[in-house]
Amino acid sequence: MDSEMVMHSGGCHCSSVRWRVHAPARVVAWQCNCSDCSMRGNTHFIVPSESFELLGDSKQFLTTYTFGTHTAKHTFCKVCGITSFYTPRSNPDGIAITYRCVDAGTLTHIEIKTYDGKNWEGSYSKTGIASCSKVSDDELSK
Image (cartoon, rainbow, N blue to C red; front, side):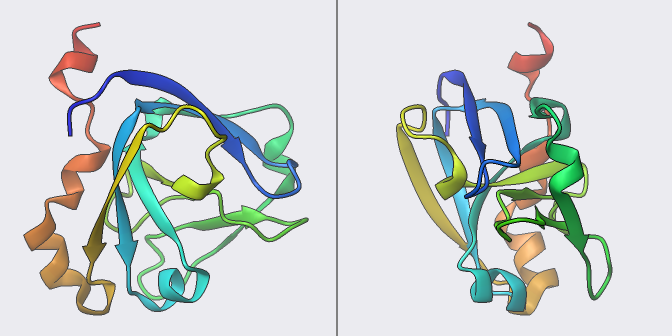
């Protein structure tokens, strides 16, 4: 989905964790049915790691949970428990942004696609999700 690149800000419920991310104004967000995402109701879009910046003293308020392959790093606020971003198993070189944790005003369109996390390997090869954390040629030329 081609879109103007903008700077989004966001964070957790209590604002102890704050970040900004350079990403399109129009995004494709993934609704996953794996045990973790479905229990949390998480729907996220994925960006290259270099597009994401943790702000201020946010790091001190973060903790991480892993399970299974331990590739995904489910990062959440120690104070309020909200996962506003994390490192997904599908894109260990990227960051998954919980779109509902983006401050209002910069996301202009969200297309929601499904990811079959219960059948992870099959969904990974069919969806093309791995490309979401790659820097585009347009971004490299800037």
